[in-house]
Image (cartoon, rainbow, N blue to C red; front, top):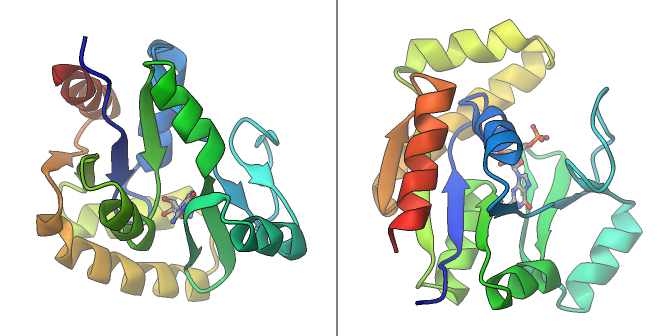
Length: 185
Ligand code: 5GP
């Protein structure tokens, strides 16, 4: 059996990356989902060690200094997010199907260090749909939404850098398309 490839899923804010990841967590135990480190506070319902490793800025900086992050970035100009390197390597060594859900800056860093990985972009059906989803979830202020939409424009412009584009018109369909891709080689 050939060893599994790392899959990186990126895409703009509010496109539904987190919901696709949650579907996969529930329905596809064969997929190993990386748990990112972040300096942002937990939202209601988020569990430390499951959704993120929530940590202080100092602890995060120490991990970066020790070279323990496969990639990391400041996202939306606010908090730092990074992928701890050790667990990803362990999952690959164990022959699991590892999936990283990260932003564009992080995807580019992984591309530079692991060009053999598979890069998938989750796209919204349309720009208006993306704006509607961001407003609809109501977790950001108007100012934060404006920052996220600026980032989203940059991210959408970069989708051609990816090996595959999946349109998130339906969570279940998009998640199953992603898992099929991951199983394909
Ligand atoms: P949220 O704060 O809404 O959970 O995530 C904000 C953004 O951070 C999302 O675009 C998500 O893809 C990105 N993100 C989450 N974890 C990581 C990570 O480990 N590395 C990078 N570069 N981005 C991440």
